[in-house]
Image 1: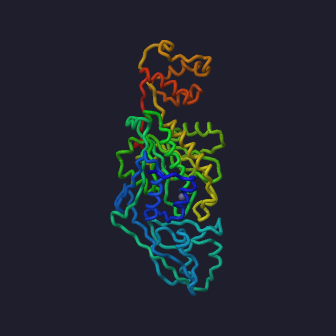
Image 2: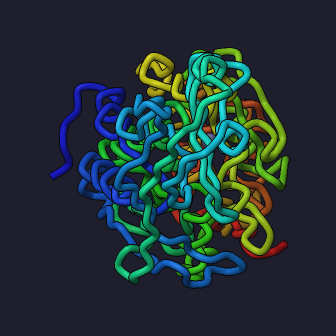
Image 3: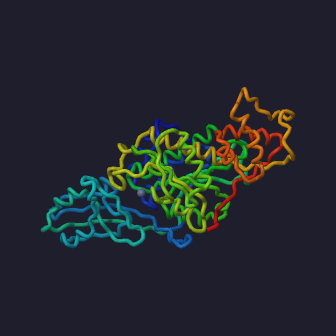
Length: 444
Ligand SMILES: [Zn+2]
């Protein structure tokens, strides 16, 4: 049974402090917490990919285990301790237990020059070394003429069951899946240790969206909506490499990133740049009525859409994000940065984008000549809906199997749902056939 929750922030708080690095026990915990809040109808499951196996041109990394890690002064005083904050070591640091001079230690210390009291988040997943992260103000105080004891007791596990994990759910429209219509995919990555907005906020906005799509299902015949949570980049690569059969069914994707900080929403466009999905998201944001920003593919907040919309996959994928923000990739990215109303608002915009894109189809005429409207109960009384009455001819002229309902609505200047409701009346009487939005997957 999916758990009730007080607020999106309370879900985020449940996994915030975990050391959610790529492949780790805390990542598994996070994926199971996410699963506990996903609606039952999503049939959420977690998959495991064995370490060191090939996924396309990449390799699945080993599971990273940290038993303890600290940096001490010569006299034994602790300077930083992994126990206090997992950001104190570079993620995937190699083990070390050594007494070092300042000159030897310094190349292994990282700090942020922008946020002097914050611990920066650093990672070296593949080209590995070791290192500690600390506030610049602490770094400045360390005596240069003393020795230091660096201890990182870390381990890299490679047994098949210690693999990279991703969590996936699938929500169908009213009446069950329509394989012809295909799927949309909603993604958020869960892999940044002890950080809230990047991308715990996207994770909880996605959970909210999933619940909305179960509470009020998409109209019958719509696309199914897949939800994906896991580690950034390698997680999506590993999942797709194991599910190449799904790629042709994917009609579009939305990445939810940094949805909780105080900044306007931004639409990051797909690689196609002027795809139906881009235009629908822009329409939804404009209708939402608040100021919003727009940017090119991967130029606002580059995330897993670089994989989903990348070479050889090419599923048009947008991002809905409030990026950028000053606390990014530091210990200051905490619960104070994220706000419930903003994470909910991002979920609402994503919801309306999904509802429009997933329910959109291309109506193709089955009749000849001007349709006998009043004889078939399709005439719209101008006294009831003047605008729709004026647009009837124009709408009917566009049933040639070239224009989607969204495009027709856009061309005649009417609301999408008004036009869809009217087209549905033609469909119910067999006067139009619904053609699906075509897949562009794998074309470049
Ligand atoms: Zn990030």
